[in-house]
Image 1 (tube, helix red, strand yellow):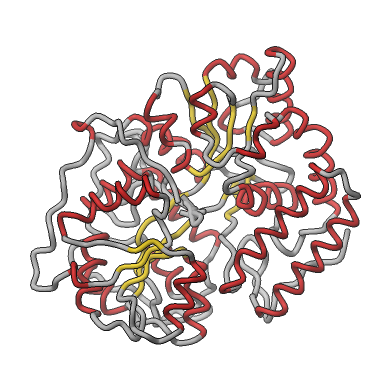
Image 2 (cartoon, one colour; image 1 turned 180 degrees about the horizontal axis):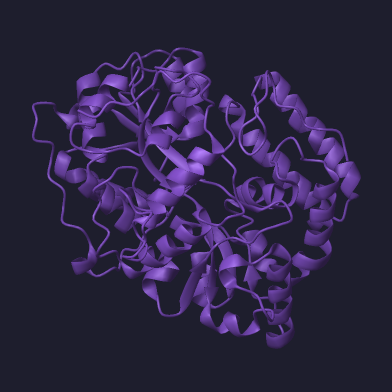
Length: 491
């Protein structure tokens, strides 16, 4: 039986280097056959989202996110149906609550994956799940949720230590070490969740857009400035703005995990820095005029991509998968652009935990056993675009759309300038407030034309109050902190 060393001292909640290494390792397995870095797992990712979120909705594995799948993929490309657990534990007896796959279409697909084991699930908002567990009624046997959902539960000693469960599972499957470390939440020997799946966000473009790429630009190593120039060239050439952003969807992840880290090197600490001022100035004056104005109504970008309203888009992999799957010869996937500080990206980790007051922990363990089987993980990858966290997943016959996303994620994770920006941690039921702050900063400046310095100072004060009141320490890419994370003064 494989056992994980949980005795190392000084372990941070998640080491950025560790996340990057594991992310690249996972992504490599879906890459070319010659990729020497592919050891054991398929590409990384969801927020779908909770948003994902896997906000985080792949690559796709991966924020959550609530992310999407393709119902029309040929049957022969899907992995064989998984079998029900063959031990004496009845997984169907467990009350399984998940913050992922809440949208109706995703939920239907997920239930077909659960059916062979007789398992059902109840979708839930993060705050509702936390409240229900902390109420102590024993109504939830197993919780599937984003990494950031678990710290407030850990603070109240509301979860079971999953070390023994992981050890049992590791007898016949291998988990990516860095994701196991993430589940320790900074402790040495208390595992709050078993890794379940992962996702992230990438770019997509119609082939017709490629003719407008700036001279000398490498689509796999774009800068944000080049991206803006590309959108302007499309506008000039086609007479209409054909770049799009999911402003009605997971746009807060775009700001938190991509824009702020790429331009400032941080998410929270540099929120109102001089670099943030420059970024919002560029977004207001150069980028937004090239964005399709219908972006304020876009939730999933796969729809405007397929309709032709948009040629270039950013979104969670699970919210792009239909475009890639339905017409893989028309669309290309590629890494998100880089700013002066690096190439920000947001790996989304989803875990499975058992509340301490679970009334049926054995059935809960059976659910976790089923969901972490390589063949079950292959189905989730193929049909829901969330990527595996265990080895032994067969990726040799991935659907075309998933393969496109996997290649993009591989390039993103292996970019030498990549900056891993984790989903916000430690905010508990108030996690949605940080999303509102980032959205407000963008909207007030870019959409409403308010003074940038004033907006950043005011929203920065709101952010600092949120951190102080929740006691949330910094998370990557911001440096570790003793006590609440600090939003630095304006630069």
